[in-house]
Length: 381
Image (cartoon, rainbow, N blue to C red; front, side):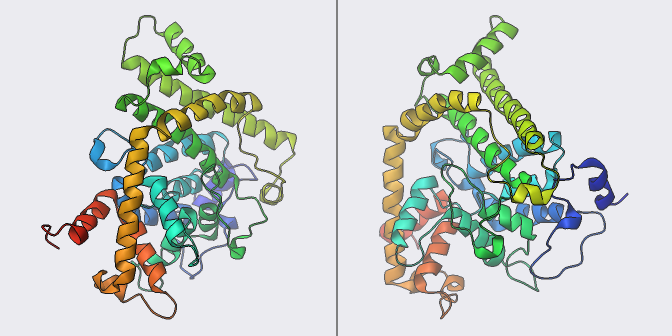
């Protein structure tokens, strides 16, 4: 049985099936036993941009400790959650996995602080948005193949990257990727999985760091619900096991709710095929109104208690200064760029876009090292 037959047998009629793919920009023979979306996933995993995620900030900068999530571990956790939802809903697990692993490739060093300052510095030169930069990476910046630039991913994977949509992700979508239509259900799953992952794993990291305390969470309904269930099932459970189990339960509650609500919405709106998904007025993969209501206090708490904590703000302010000083130095004297980046400055690519691409590609520690090399007179260059 080939993968086309397997998908026809196992997946729902509104799932994104390999045989319905719009293919790749550059024609390639497909693999005899790996589906197009498996190949997309593999190309993403083997990319330099994916490996760099290991040293890019989620909330805590790399040098603050080995325990905390990075963009790489976050992407793996998003993938695990997305695959569970996709498999249960009988959608294309491989497409959701590829999109999960790709969704943060375009992130700068130092998290959202890095993205914000690069966007400011690129004002008048196209700005900066990490979803569109991810698209640029997979279409142009990764150079590993003899016949084309980029990774030559399928249309659906590129579409899902561009249409990744959360509170922090609202990019202008290229016309080629049909901005007026909804993305596949597999792409919509990644958006929800991303939210589930960063809510709960940022909560775990915040508690481990001591920036937030469990006592602060006693008034959060979702935390209380999960904690009550864990204490009832495990009387006398002590720390840190209780904390881990509560967070595990929180993830399970959100995943279960998403699966049940999404299944109900698909059925209630008589979604029969992929065209119905794309032409529907809103996204079909979502939480129930009850869980949305319960999530809001938790998200507000993370925003105020963790993301705006003075220690996080201090690091964000330092990161903005580092990146601005690097950017200004390279713009003033592009001969300080590595030769491979100097060579990219031409009529198509001005120095601003090349410097932006170079800085966006940096890991946290590489950016800090570059800062030392350029501004510390005692550091070897």
